[in-house]
Structure formats: C-alpha cells, structure tokens
Length: 172
Image (cartoon, rainbow, N blue to C red; front, top):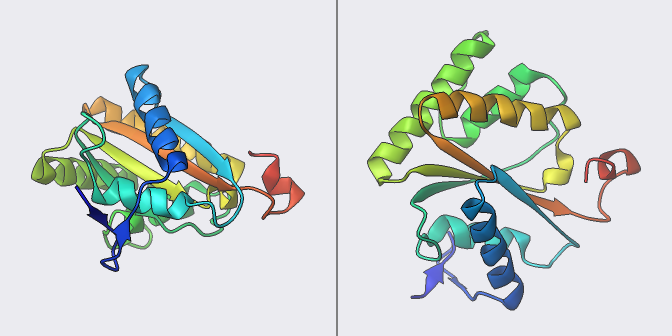
C-alpha cells in the first residue's frame, strides 16, 4: 500500500525507516512508553514521522499519531501543557490551572482515540533536541494522567544531532 504525506507526495520507506519501525514495535512489545532516534539533518526523521501518522498498517497496535511542531518552550509546566494542548489541535485557554490543562489533555486524547478506534496515542516530537530537560518530566505527568484513564501514551523523540548547543546536546 502506498502512503502519502500531507502534500500528497508518496512516502517511500527506506531501510532506515523500516529499522526504526521495527525498533518501535520492539519497544511496544516490552511496554516501553517511548523511544528516541538520533541522526543528522536530512536523514528522514520527519519523513518517518509523516509515515507513522499516515499509515497505521505497519503494526498491529491500534493508535492515533500526532506529529508535534517543536519549538523552545522553556522549563515551565504551564507553557509545556499549553504547547501539548495546541499540538492536539485544541485551543489554549489562558490562565487555566495545570490540573485543568491535564484534564483537557486526557479528555481530548480520549475523544481522539474513541473516534478513531485507537488504543494508544503516538506523540512524535520531531526536533526533540529543542526540549528542555524538564519537558521529559512533563511527558511523564501527562502519561500518568492518561494511564489512570486506561490510555497509553507512546512518545517518539526524533533528535537532530550536531545541530544544537552543547547544553542541549547533554539531554541526548
């Protein structure tokens, strides 16, 4: 089956993409909550993300995928949760408490999965090297809230190496 990206162009799976998909399947089989991939620029990380979003037939796991547009967020939980909400396609409400933002995330993901017949949310963080170290703790907070509702979150971090400052490379 041919898979097309958002521009309508065909996505041709490469050996590297197939290897990454196999590693994701292996991570899912042992109940990991995420996986990270590192490579230099122009090696197909974004194309991999587009493929995962457009084609769910490569795995038996029923999922809904969201590709995140990453930017520098800072270490604050509120900014991170607002960003996460916007990546799910919801409108951010200013001056909302963190627990209400997490509740919105859980409800939004639950509705997405129910309407699509999926059991997991694959959240793809392209250019994950832009994340602050605190963001990884915020992912855990969201995962814990989703897990209470019986929802699985699997985060795919796509790191672009040799692109960031030394401080950010320490995360990788």
